[in-house]
Amino acid sequence: MIPLRFRAELPPIEEPLVVRLRDWLTGGFRSDREAVLLGIADGGREYDFNGFSLRIEADPDQSLDGDVVMGFPGSSVVHRLVRAGSSHNTFLITERCDQLCVMCSQPPKQAHRDLFPQFEQAALLAPIDATIGLSGGEPLLFKEQLFALIDNVSKVRPDLRFHVLTNAQHFDSDDEAWLRGSARERILWGIPLYAPGAADHDAIVVKEGAFTRLFGSLAILARAGAMIELRTVVTRRNAALLPRLARLIATDLPFCASWALMQLEPIGYGRMNWNVLFHDSSVEFEPIARAMNIALALDIDVALYNFPLCTVPEEYRHYAPRTISDWKQKYLETCRQCSLKPSCGGFFEWYDPKRGFARVSLT
Image 1: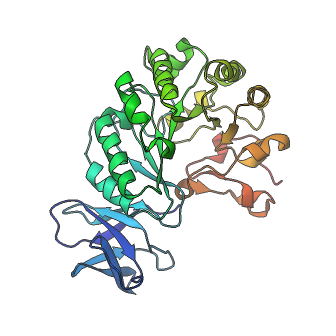
Image 2 (image 1 turned 120 degrees about the horizontal axis):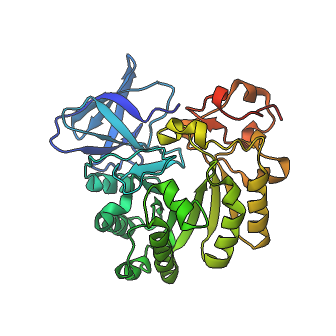
Image 3 (image 1 turned 90 degrees about the vertical axis):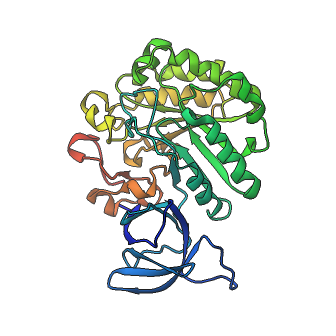
């Protein structure tokens, strides 16, 4: 598993520090947000940061050049916010949420630390043409700060794109002008829709009225011309409903750019409720296939996220891209000789074969 935290010795700071690590200077230019490598010894890397020492303990074979890290006063750890060589960079805006989805991989917490200024600094230091994920919890619980972050970054870095994961419970008509703004084409809104009716959707997110509120928000986003990616985690609770959901999306939500059917992530509430929620698509793909056939016939851009290729019938495998974030991705011993491995996203780091797919085999 790719580490996102490192032990470190920080310079004297009174506020959270965000800095880009560099192995060397390019053209002699250096910003006041860059730390330049001085040397590697005894399992640690020493950097010069504006005349102060910054030491990070990391595997010497692992590149940190161009990565953006954050450290806190009095801490002996830095957090890796942006990895220069990765397409999976997401800022956890908050751990607060107003839903309690039964399969949530990031169960909500009441505590919140406002790090919007630090996230803004990190985005400004990201590689050219990067996509930054903004997630939670529910990031739109802090809608004003979130919009300001996107605006401020976009003015300086119009090359960046944003993928915002939100339950879409907090849009209102006053947001339409902002949603139509200059950043509109650089934002993809990832929004969960779990069932074709209020009773089932609301039961899964454990919030009465969520389905109705969601459709109101989707209408606001549609009027503003926003790009929307619908997301449906497949579980035993909704698998049989997927064909109906496909028809609903085609008839009522044709303005959505894409629909992702997602396998369950075995962490958080997903792990806690695994035995009652996990739908084994390796032996029961039929409702997923029916939903996909309907979606494709009705011209919906549909994909399978987090599905190992050997658990998907051959004719649907080209709809299953590598989507598991690289820092939480693994392959099983069985995968070593599999011909599909180069194009397969593998498994979640915390996947347990004893409780997982019944059919995992060489292909």
